[in-house]
View 1 (cartoon, rainbow, N blue to C red):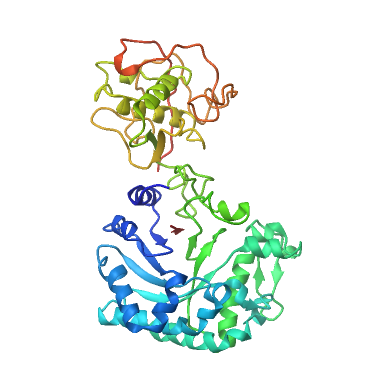
View 2: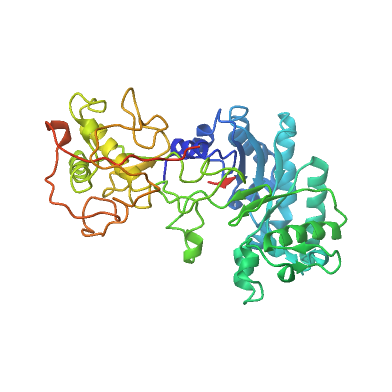
Length: 448
C-alpha cells in the first residue's frame, strides 16, 4: 500500500476534505498535519471493552492518539467502535460508558466543542424500514439506544450510520429494482411512496437515511443529525466513501475487496467527480497522477524497463538526450521516471500502465523539475519536441488501442504493440528518431 505521505498527497490532489480512519495510526495522523483535512479517528472494536470499563484507559487513549496531534491535525470526530451492536454485541453494555469516558477526556483538554464522539451503526438495526415513517430500531437494543441518543443530544454530536444500498439490493431477492439502488432516474410511477407521509423516494439510500430519522423519532429524539459514515454509492449528503483503496487481501467475497476508488498503485478504478455537480474533470479520480520509478527498485530492472519504454513502447524520449531539458540528472532512476510517466500519460493513465514489472508506482506529486516538465504536468509545453505525428488524447486512438503481443514484457499489461526497435540505453546514447503524441489534458469524503 502507498505510504501515509503518498496517501495524503492523493487526498490533496483530489480535493478530499474529510477522511475517516479505522484507527488512530500515528504515521497517518502526522502526514495529515497542516493539511486542513477534517479527520475522524476510531477506537477499534478490540480496544472497546478496556476503554468502556476504565476512565483512565479512555483518558490515556485520548492523550496518545488525539491530544498529541491537535491542533496540527484537524481531528473533528472520534468513532468509538464500529457496528458494535451487530458485530460485537457483548460490548454493547459498555459502549455508552466508553463514549462518556472519551468525551470526559476531551472536556478536560477543552477539546469537546471541536471533537465530537459517536459510534457507527449498521443500518440493519433498523426494522420495518419501508415505508420509512414506520421504521423503528430493533427493540432488543432499546436499553442501549435511549442512553446513546441522550448522550448524542446532550453533547451536540451526531448519529453515525453505515448505509449500503448494494446490500439492500442483494438481500431483496429482486424486490428492489437495480435502478432504485443505483440512483438512476425513475419515472414517477416507479418511485417508492410512503403512504403515511406521501413522500416520494427515488433511491434506497434516501429511504434508509429517512428510516433512521423516523426510528429515532420513535424513541422521542427528533434533533440528532445523521452522518453517513460508510457508503459505496454516495448521494448529495454528508458521507464518507468506502473506501480509498481496493484491498485484494481482504477476506470475504470479491465484492468486499473492491470498494476502492483506486487500486494499490493509485490508479483510479472509475471516474468520480469529487466536488459535486458543475465540475468537469476538475477533481476527478483520474486527475494529476504521475508514474515514477519506485524507490529502491533494482537498477537493472529499471534499465530494462527504460529500454522497453523508449523502444517498443514508442515513448518520445528525446527530452532525455544530452543537451535537452531532462538529460540531467544523468542516471537510470531519473530517466526511467520520465519515460514511465510519458508512457503512462500517453496511455491515458489506464489501469495497469504504470507497473513495468513492479519497478514503477503512481504518485500525485508532479515530478517535474527546473526546465524539465513532465507530461501530465500543468506546465507541460504544448510542443515539447519536433514531432512527426500528432494527436489529442481525446481525438485519436494511436498508441492506446493496440493489440497485446507480449504478456511477459516489462511493459504494462495492456495497449502495447510489437516492435523491432533495438533497446535504448538512454543515459549513454547519442541520438535517435522518434514521434510524439501531444496530449490535451483537462486539468482542473473517503476511508483509510
